[in-house]
Image (tube, rainbow, N blue to C red; front, side, top):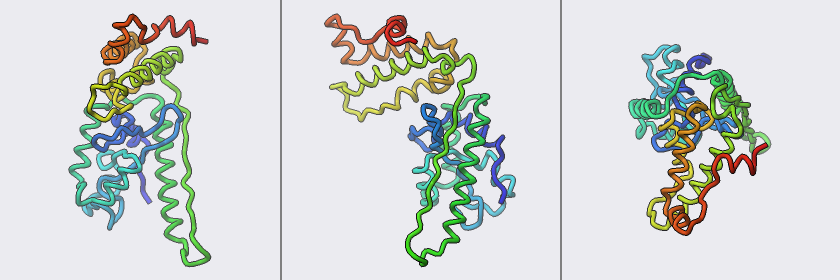
Length: 257
């Protein structure tokens, strides 16, 4: 059976910004902390007859091409394919375009390895589906098909924040400090999302923390420090003369290698 090309998946991943395309979803396609693949390659128009949103007029090449593919988390993949009436092809294409407009970036060196592993997960899923379909469930009892968790070692590109561990540690410290203060804001009536600050960073600086150019590190650090100072708890603490975060130099003196 024909399948998507590595080049198509590499482009798809880069333009996804490493996010599930479903509107409002904050799930990453790849967890860059652990290297675990979380997203799935999905067809907008089904790859075979009888599938959701199947388009008979498509060629095999079109069916497996970039324009007919979308990256979704497992939850939203199952949702859109279970309810194709509620999620027609045009809606999925729209979600994909919005995600690309907001988070898309140019392809990077590490995308090749990620695309390769995403395709391996896709192939494994097809194999598991065939095996499950061939099993005789009336034989001796229930059969459990184990899903294999795939991991990848993501090497940050040279010149990015991810390539400088001291910068990564400090930026992650500031993000954690911001979430600590903002999540306890007594005046906020909205449900707090710990992922929101990372989404904002991706939009403002053009990528996830580790993919942002090291040349933008000072601006990113200043931005996070300002966001911390603007939280109500930080303002209260500062009015009492208390420090609300360590400077880069202080942090390195305490935690640097």
